[in-house]
Image (cartoon, rainbow, N blue to C red; front, side):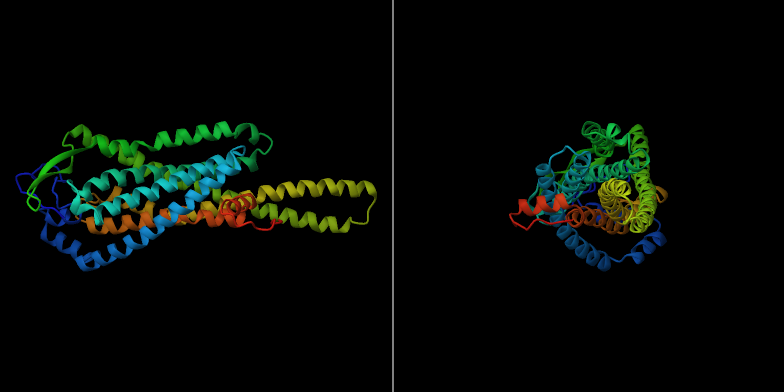
Length: 383
């Protein structure tokens, strides 16, 4: 890491524009010795470095996997077309997962590979730019998942009206609105921080770094934005997904029980009159339609369950950041925060990388489209 002189790095704000970066800033602050000892004892430097190396490696593998899988997802959905509203929302989800992977790869490659050759503090700048972009897009992913889950609930609650309520145009409009509402954290990360020039003793040159605004209104706005966009938005999306998932699981169980009872009743009517036979044929047609809808609901439920499992660490991190003042990247517990942040990054990266497996396993059209895209020339798969 680069180092700057005291004259260049003295500011009234807790975040000083030091070229040492946030990994060391927390240890350099003037804090109570007992608190500093507790923080260091909770996560020693050796343990911290080892955990960071392991998590960064696993995260990058997951990010590369997410980039490849979501690129394939987008290509397949484009080939399938957007006549179905669900294809639009799933494509938007794949695009967001792809951007998340790119932003994390950019951030960590900038820190670990390119930093010695750059005329700026790679760690601080990459956290502001790449981390801010990831923050925005990950919340967009959460709300798109919430929209997909809610859409499936509407299909069950109002099946006769859902085709007029959820159209390709309304779905596209919803995706744009979600993106507009979740872009706030990314924009305010720039409004509340400044790019400043500091002197580096190692390079014997002035380099670019990041410093917060000392304006009291900027600090107040930053707190408000953090609470609304950083805590309420993602947790509310998580809650919506959880509630919709429970509802869909209950409905799937009821549909399964209903289908079992209908199948049992039909077996007793096989030898009835031709009129009943015609009625049974109509009932069988309705049953096939319900099975098609059921497969899509099951697909959404699996996606939602994966999202919930992978988003729990993010909710826990947001809660701790809101409750404990020093639990942030520049705070006393910066080491713990960074490790927990990597865990949340990894969870959401895994969530975005495994969707292709879900689609391939549970969606016959996607499976055929992917095999055709990869020129595997499979035999026609029958459901």
